[in-house]
Structure formats: structure tokens, C-alpha cells
Amino acid sequence: MFINNKIAAALLLALTSVTVQGLPVVEDNGKVHLTATGRSGHLQTTLEVPMHHGGKEAADHEHEDEDTAITGRPTRYESTVLARRLLAKSKSGVLTTVFPSHLTSPRVPAAVADTPIGLPEYIASCEEPTGNPTVLSLKISTATINANAGSNVSLSLSWWDEYVHLTHQQPWSAANLPRLNLVGYLEEIPQPEVDEAGIPTCFVAAHPDSAMWLPGKKWAAHQGIWTRIVVQEVYWIGGFGDRNYIGWFDPEEWRAVTKEQWEAVRLPGEK
Image 1 (cartoon, rainbow, N blue to C red):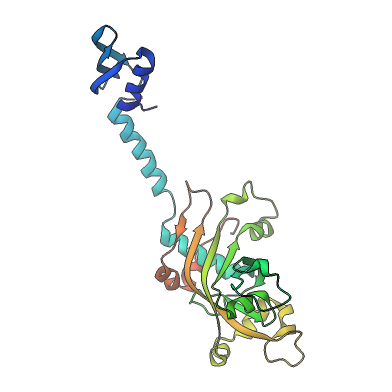
Image 2 (tube, rainbow, N blue to C red; image 1 turned 60 degrees about the vertical axis):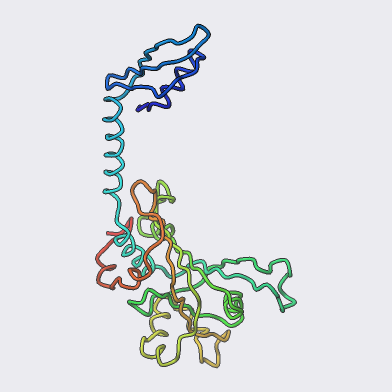
């Protein structure tokens, strides 16, 4: 373990109860030379402190270990590509909105004003390669009402359940599996863009039961609208920080990832 000059001085003070004058001098062999003042006046003291490979060499060795650990982790952009694959492979996520300051509905408690609420929601990636998830928003849903009142939205996704589905076993630590949060706002997709992207077909392929509330259907259980989450920021936790990237992505890099790129990578448990 590397012990620096200040620690060596503190050890000497604790052992001798003297006042140190000036800075300690540390030699490569681990000896610390100090001039101190005690009850008997000035005294010259040499304290031998065990060091690993010498002071400077130990510090350099620690930096080398840090550099090696950093080099072994995926870069931010590599992690961005993995995150885009996670989005493409996800069929649901927790959509969070915030209740408005002034609530008008008698069915909503006044105490939840300005409070976030997150609920599971169907999603699909029907507008590749934009990186903006598609949501079939029901007009009666809390998320839609809050978004219409001006709330931003965030969508949380994880690889936890899909890992179990793929491998048929529990991970040794779910905390070491990827998850991310998309921050942005909800906007309605114009009908021409819905038709051009084939969004109904794409969404129903991911969620067959959603055919029961497709927008424009007279027999639909609820009135819905096609919306997208316009992603403005992305936060990623790739797993444990010593081997994975953790932090914010560059929004431009997020939007620049192509389908070919995320199709070429694999998440934990995939073959």
C-alpha cells in the first residue's frame, strides 16, 4: 500500500506527540526524515514506513491499473450502440411523467401535484433509425394527460427480464446488466408519417393485443393516438462501473446510430 508524505507525518506525530517543522523528506527506500520539536527541544527523527516498490513507483503503478481498467471498458459510443439495441429489442418500459402544479380533475388527489409517476407502457421502435420510441397513447391514460399539460417524459428500460427469457436462468447479479433512461417529450405523429413508416403494422407485430385499441377504429376499446418520445438526453448504466460505461450519452451520437450498427452487437445473454 502506498503511503504518502502527509500520512507518514501523521504516523510520526501519533507515535511521538511532537510538532513537525517543515516538510518531511521521503527517500525511495521508505525512510522519512523529519525535524520536530518536543519537550526536550529540537530532535532529528527518521521513521521507516513500509512502501510498495517505493513512493513514486507505487503511485505510477496505481495509475497504470486505472488506465488498464478504463481501456477495458466499452467507449461511450460503443455503449450508445448497445443502448440502441436495447431500445430496439424492448417491447415495454416505465414511462414517467409529472402531475401538473394545478390539478383540475376531481379524481386526482391534490397531494400528487408536481409529483412524478411512472407506469409500464407498450413501446416499439417503428421509426428507425431516429432512436425515438413509438407509443400508442390512450387519451385517458395518466401519462397522456400529464404530457398534454406540459410534462416532459422519461422512459426507463432494462435488460433484466429479457436476459432471463433468453438464458432461462437468473443472472448472478442483475445490477451488472444494462439499463437506460430516455429523457424528452411526447408528441403526436402526423398521419402521413404514420402511413409512411407503417407504424400500425410495426406496433401490432410487437403487441398483437394492441389491435383492440388502434387509433381510428370505431370498435376500439379506448381512443388512442400515435405518439413518439422525442429523445433529448440518454442516461446509461451498462453494468458495474469497473467494466462498463456509466453516464450520459451525446444526443447526436444517439441519433447517428444505424440499424446495421446495433444489429451487429450483442447484449448479455444473446448469441
